[in-house]
Each structure stands twice: as structure tokens, then as C-alpha cells.
Length: 186
Image (cartoon, one colour):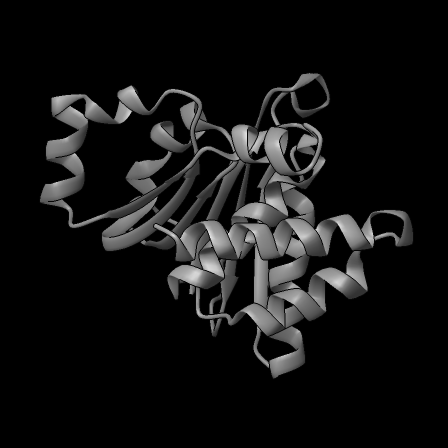
């Protein structure tokens, strides 16, 4: 399984990679990955290449990723080219109308890419007092509910629980469940 995880600095991209890695290692699977940080400390672009399986190189070639997790809409659109034909994406959106662009719709249809759009900021405003710190875990919850990514909710829940700092554990688990319920309601 090959994941591209994208967003902006501070959105929890590296924590998400650690969660997926913990799950894979517990299963006895090989993991390899790489992060590109740009201006991450100033809210700049961050991309994580993460692979589970018998891979030798940490980087994912264009057209090879199975899953794209995007914590930022613009970064999600910018990195769709990494997905393979038939790939899956979960994208945090702030303007759904961007996905009504005819060229983008044709591209997604031609490549048979499934895209789940999640209004993460709205959901976190409504249910978590606007604390966007938990956006990454919200997206992991949605991914598990969609049955993509090769992991089940319980595996993600266990990894999030064990990796979360104590002061964030309860809220992370709440956001995970929230992401699952939002995706189930789709």
C-alpha cells in the first residue's frame, strides 16, 4: 500500500505517518517513508510518501499511490497526479466548488479516482470547538469508514491511542470516531 499524505506545516502529517507505521509494524509488515518539508514551520507545503510492503525506495512515483490523504484542499488537488488509476483520496475541503471544475472532473473520471470530500473545518468547528489540531485524525477516521487504506478502525484507534500525548488522547479518539461517523453518513 502506498500513501501520499499532504497538507500544510502543523496539520499532523508526520503523526499520521507514525499511526500508519505503528499499524504496519504491529502486523509485521515493512514500512518505508520520506517527508518533504518545504516551509513547513511557516505553514508551507508538506508531503509524506509512506509505503507498507516490500518496497526498496521511500519515494512514490507519479501514478503509483493507492491513497491520497489531503489535509488541505489545494495541496490535495496539486498532488492528485500521484494516485494510480483507481486510487482513492480523502480531501479536507473549504470550497467544494473547486471540484466542479470540468477539467478536474474529467481527470478524476478518466483515471477512475474516487474522491471523498470532507468539510473538516466545519465539522471541527461544530463538534470540537474549532480545534483544528485533530483534522488529521478526523481524516483517518473517514478513511477507515470508507474501507480504503488497508486498515480497520480498531487498528487506527489503537495506534492513535498509544501515540497520542495524554493531554490529546481523548480528543484524538473523539475526532477519529467523528470522522468515521461522517464518512458512514455519506
